[in-house]
Image 1 (spheres, rainbow, N blue to C red):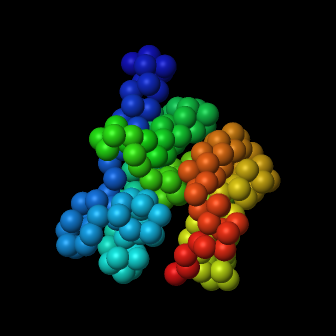
Image 2: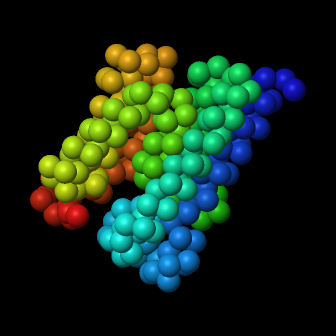
Length: 194
């Protein structure tokens, strides 16, 4: 198969995979309220945690990360270039943010970016996870942790895995924009804590 056609196919599959919002079936399975009606209205692991605790949140996080990891891993197995794999990663994250199955109203893409990052740039991603964990430990704010971790991404990737810098730069822009309401609440001192 032509490489360009293969890339288009995998990017499409990545976007469709990203469009599956796993928080919704997980909450249904645990008989929890719709996470989009909680907290920030984000269908992600943080809101699932707020209503159901760590078990359903961990399942949501794992599944949302897996839908980012799998298409990027597949692209790597097919010997697509790092830049092609980065495109696949961006398609998966974009799918979570603007999912075709949910009227283009999705989440913030952090867990999906985590999975994609682990597939393409594992060292950078593990360091970003450590940054996230430190901010959570210190300030108990998921949004703040996500924002600080993702804006650290371009710097850390430039130092450790420079070929992935464009990916982390674009992810930082996308995810920070998706957190704009959180940034307003942080500035006003109204952002909720764990």
